[in-house]
Length: 395
Image (cartoon, rainbow, N blue to C red; front, top):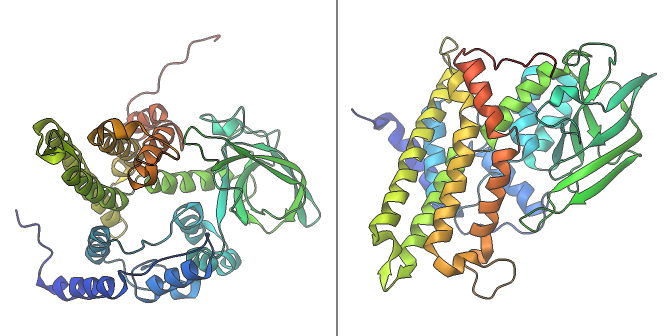
């Protein structure tokens, strides 16, 4: 089987490699939205290495959906320490939602600054009593003239302390069935009545927040899709979220770092990578990653061939990807031996403790974004057509 892309793509690969060599010493400084980060995002867009198929009028490169070129870009960027394009909830989740379901005004207003990293977004979905059963959410919004008035509480709101905007699910039709009474709104985070409170994580950071919303007023036009049909919009966003939580291109870059680590760490004077038990674990991870990359190509190709059914390919990404990342980070910790147990400010930390932090982070992501147990139900019922789990009468 010939897996080469063909000579017609050799020139394009050379072009990508040349760009990387010219820019491999680029260092990004400052917090999100800093000048250097925004400029780098724009440079990647201008050269077609980010937002490649998003139309120019919305701030993208405006190129065609050539899946081989996208694959070549991902491959070459993964091999290099060059700064990768910024991601996040706005870029990876909201932008594709707006492209398919937003109004023209919303596309013009939000997509370009989001792609450039000038606007950061958070996601207002989960509530204290509405996690896996998201449709039971109680945060409400009432229309008062030309404004929505929002009251309620959200939890596990990632990066809310850094964000300028929030895409939020609210109940606007309290008497409708729970899946039919929800609307999808775009809420400025500087609106009066928003109280953000950080949540301490097991990684030691506070990337999650609670949001308390009291008479928060936002423009009536800030609704995506029809009133009361936000569940459909939310599911579109959730589909993009599950894919973004386990990008195989990011995992490839991480695998390269793991291989370097295993070449440098030793046990009794022998490189860890030369130990059969460790090498077998590494090859298992590498094989599973190759399968994920092939699955990603299947999903990409379905965007061109609309008759191709990629439903199963899409819904397995989050389940397989988060568990793979957790296993990959765990192998790195084992390869470091006793140094892998260190944390926080120990002077003997490898890579500033990034392996330990990411190991715990992906343990959290196995739960977050829809627990992997729920993902298995989704796969069995929606993708494989298996019957739903029977409900116990009177329970």
